[in-house]
Amino acid sequence: MQYMMMFFEPATTFAERDDPSRAPDYWGAWKAYIDSLVSSGAMVSGNGLEPPSTATTVRLANGERLVQDGPAAATKEQLGGYVVLDVADLDAALTWAARCPAAASGAVEVRPVMPSPSA
Amino acid sequence: MNRSATKSEVGRATDRLVRLAYARLVAWLASEWHDVAAAEDALGDALRAALEAWPRTGIPERPEAWLLVAARRRLLDAVRARRVRAAAMGELESLAEPAAPAPPPVPDRRLALLFVCTHPVIDEGVRTPLMLQTVLGLDAARIASCFLVAPATMGQRLVRAKARLRDAGTRFVVPEPDAFPARAVAVREAIYAAYGTGWDALGTTDPVCRGLTDEAIWLARVLVETLPDDAEAKGLLSLMLFCESRRQARRSQEGRFVPLAEQDPALWERTMVTEAEALLTAAVGVGDAGRFQLEAAIQSAVVDGARTGRPPRQAILALHTALVAVAPTIGNALARIAALADVAGAEAGLAALTALPEATVATYQPYWAVRAHLLRLSGDEADAQAAYERAAALTDDPAVRAFLLGRTSH
Image 1 (tube, rainbow over the protein chains, first blue to last red):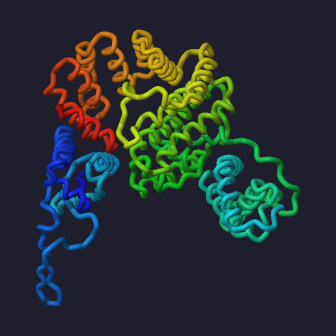
Image 2: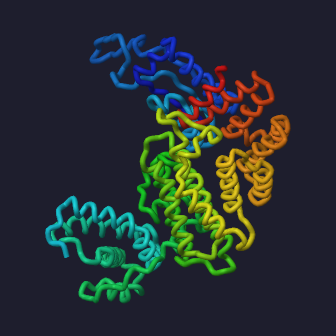
Image 3: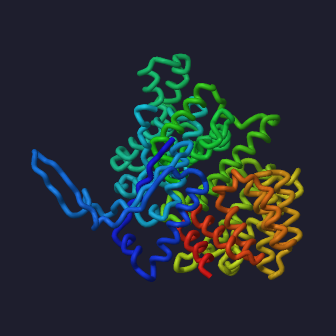
């Protein structure tokens, strides 16, 4: 089964990325996590995302085009990256989610990936 | 009778009762009724009724008996509604008769319930959750968090487990002597799994998950009380008390992880250690030493070593070797290798590590922690760093992760 883990982080955690005193720990934990996902064979794909301040959101409402700076939803925790993993079941996906650095600082949402129609 | 009971007093009294009596009442109702789910529902209704009635009427003199009568009435109502199990009606009606004299004290069927929850018809992975819900009354959503399972999934597993028990016609009794030893293993394993889950949750602030260690110790006490001749039950309780005695020492005041070798033995709970030693002494010599007695003996040796500053490494290795013979799990094999390295050196430990099955150790966190430690001791710094990173990535405890990543930056 494929699941997507979506990593939600608060602003304080996003700030660690560029803070010289904290960035090594931040990136060190992520590198170790992604490396272990890869070496376990569970990793299908994934990416980190630039911070939510770099986001642009587009809406077409009643024929009107609305383009806004910033993320789609103004929530305390914002999407910071994602991984698609292939594991036996949801229990296994949750085990990986709990190990993720974002689980301690923010939240990890786990969702089944829809099977492709041709499959 | 206390006529002036306030709502909060009633709430507190009910809470206390739930903690103390829940298991006994569920056990008794379930054994009468052969249906754990129905017994739980009925008791739940009875507790709700108590919360409504007691602020008006005062807390009854024998609240347990009150709850039992109320719960039986619910069960009876359910029967009337479903019009099944007609044969049991007469007996239940007389039991539920409100004018009948107060029933005798609820007999202690908790032990039987522990055996039911760990029955072979129940999947191994569901036994501990079922025990926590049925014997201790923990709610399914909290249990799900502790076991890192989706709440909906855990709910389904528990419902299915209870349906299996009912459909299999499981008897709510302590097994006969011929079946007893094998079934008792399952009870002890389930209790220890609850302890392990609580132990792993030290890094979280979740009081329910952290509290599982206390719950497991309480269950083991029930086991020791009700099975005074069971040496392994004493071994289990002894082991858990040894571990529990170090709770405070496992974190610094700033919340940092402190490995066993760096803990301050003065912080170990002396009363727990004393009790653990006494239990171990009482267990030893009664039959063969099972895994829990061996593990408790290892703990005892570790405590002794910390006290004297001279850990009995050979004795500890011998105990680990005996433990692997009795219980050849990956965890026990790994612990033995760590003990072997203490005696024969890091290279010997690393050589032994290669014998462990690769597929199993790939995501087994303790393996990478031990490997990293031994690689560093042997001077293989590059591989040690990589192994520390791997160990850090495989823990879900942020304090342990920070500790292990701290070991990579030298």
